[in-house]
Image (tube, rainbow, N blue to C red; front, side):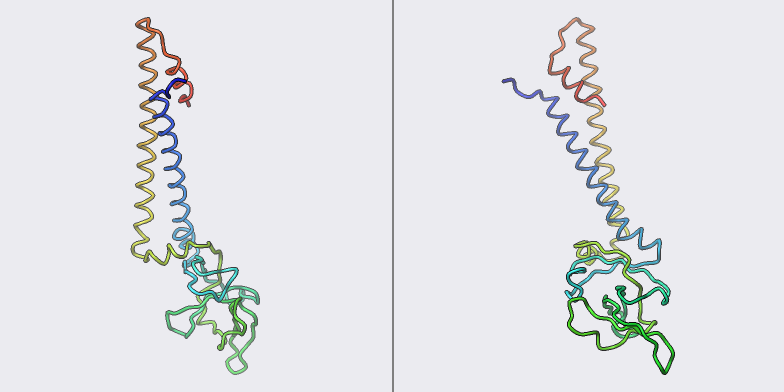
Length: 209
């Protein structure tokens, strides 16, 4: 049994490297779209679920993208993100279980509860407290979002995607150069009247686009 042709091995490694690089590039671009681009288009914000109050639908580590909506578009059954105390940064993401109107002020109030909780939240949510309604959620991605702050995220994802793109382009270019060199060796051998090795022919055919 003959040993694998060195050129063929290089071609296989080059193809695998290109495929892996392209896959990672698409993954990074997809994550960037989910975390940065898409939320920005709708004025939304990506947040990370930190507690188990919304299990099993939104377990800890889930990335939720919250977008602002008119108060009229929030109905019973929707999952909203709201300030736990009005004007304070701490927020919770729970499901609306009741909607009513305050008799004194005439303002809309929402009663919320975590899916995994046995009782409703102690205070009804005012309109001013609402950050928005959950638009979509991605499991586990919240841990990544939590680890990278906003300032770092703005350059880290584009930089990583750019590095992977350059690597993929370099790998593809290396494979293309090997194909050209193989063809040149074959043409040179034919011009000299030398016999072209079968392995070289197979490599050239297999590597051809």
